Picture 1: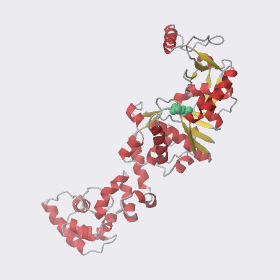
Picture 2 (picture 1 turned 90 degrees about the vertical axis):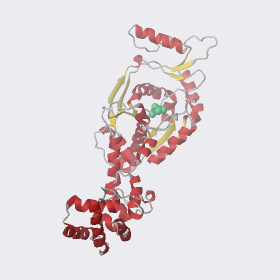
Picture 3 (picture 1 turned 120 degrees about the horizontal axis):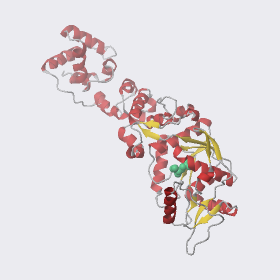
Picture 4 (picture 1 turned 90 degrees about the horizontal axis):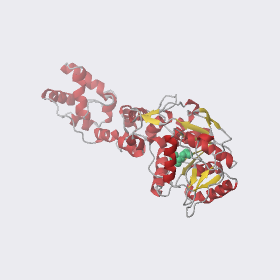
Length: 433
Ligand code: GLU
């Protein structure tokens, strides 16, 4: 099992291609295979080294570190070698049309109700004085293209219905199709998982694998990702780790969602990549679009935190949050950065809402009772039992003024667990004693 993720370094990673990286990584990890990163940087105009660095960095942060990586720009000698061989075999031919001529032909064909397929010449195109040619791959019209897609099932394309693709520009630079095939073949990639927008590319690329005498990889084309409202909006589609950080979510919350949307398996919070890999199964993917929503990431994020062990999070916690405090807090958290506010509840200053006249007297009574208590797990029970007997208060009137005064908040973990973790003198001061 050898997979690869092949982004173009023309921007940061976004939710859509993080999902593709994840699929390929999980497939490799589950089988104990290899996961490669290939940077498709043949488009010199748009590719930037800083984007390549950002992609590597983001993959590391997500725990999707590849086992090896390379750039297509380092491989152009190899591409030229294969190109020459294909040319000698008659599978590559020169073309001299300008973009304007091609566009005109397209319009004419469409106007006649015909598919706008490139009209290949009988033999070779006649050279045009002073024009450097670009190059197309000659599809084999006699060989229907068929494969068993690991997500979409049996696929069949009639090559005569496809245009011979341009593979090299007049300036010698490469388009995506052929270099990708050469790389996949040379690296013995066994499985290619990518979005269904690549299905037609795959049909063409399978003929290229055959033409260069390479084994075909297993192909899996996943349904595209959409937001709850339908199409993944331009903004949401472009959102990546910065959006995750803005929301204060854990990378594993995003990955837990991305690994399961579009499949028949439920979204479950997974603590790490290994846990996600264990359940990963291409057979569970469906053809319907994969629905993505940050709201679902939020829910998974909270569930993840509720089950996170202190040891796994200690280096990201404020110093005030020790193991006992974490244990009490975690079940109430939606985001890890809420622990900063809780650190102040334990060991700092809080801003409690101003109590009413009546509650002020009540809190003073509470302070007097609390002062005489042993500060242990039973302190809260003893305090409230005594206050109930003394004041006749019950329910909310009994508990809420205490919670507000002691924590500055109206909600949070059980007070019985919380109270002994707040320093007694600090608690008494908050009660006004
Ligand atoms: N660079 C291509 C893309 O990002 C790679 C597609 C592929 O072969 O996986 O769409």
